[in-house]
Length: 284
Image (cartoon, rainbow, N blue to C red; front, top):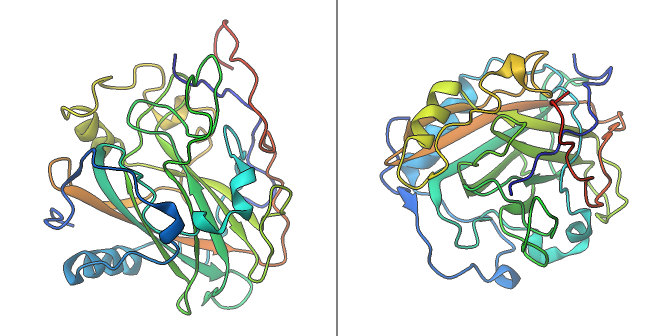
């Protein structure tokens, strides 16, 4: 079975490219050696340019990013593992390629870039499974770390990740989880974030990806719109990624994240533990 988090949540008081020829589809080669993946993976000039154009066109500059629930499956235990400081988080997972660039800006300081902050992202694979947990709805994934990684923002506030387009699981629309930690923070399972949020995807792009041969589950019939999703039903204004590319060539995506460096994220999630077994009744 695939995970159905149906957890916690609500937005807290804080909340308010043509084809990529160099990317294509990520195949099933050997897993990345995470012990050597501690620096950003170099990008070709064309992809870098597309990512920059996406950020330049963002309409969310200086808007505080919405606060979301941390769970499911945050696997906070890996935050103290320096091998997780990596930009390529695929570890051999197949899927439509996605290069994601985020820019952190300070909402209390005229949108100045935030450097030195740690950004942790994680998401499910094309089949809706999360690494690191072995549960009845996420079996056989304990001890794995795919599709998770941390990057530290550079002097312009940017972080970049190489990953794949997430799949889906019953009860949730397609998304990526993210946490942002203050510069100089010592990361660990009990670290407090400045922001905890989730990224949404344009529905037309999601439809195109799930029509591709790699995504054998097809379209998500459990949650068919943002309004029906228990996280994004109140809007995606600060969380909707801008994407450019195609399902055959891969996508570049970006978002400007407005951060309050004086805030403490409510997080509201499972804190790293295994989420409860999803209810068998109707989704709430």
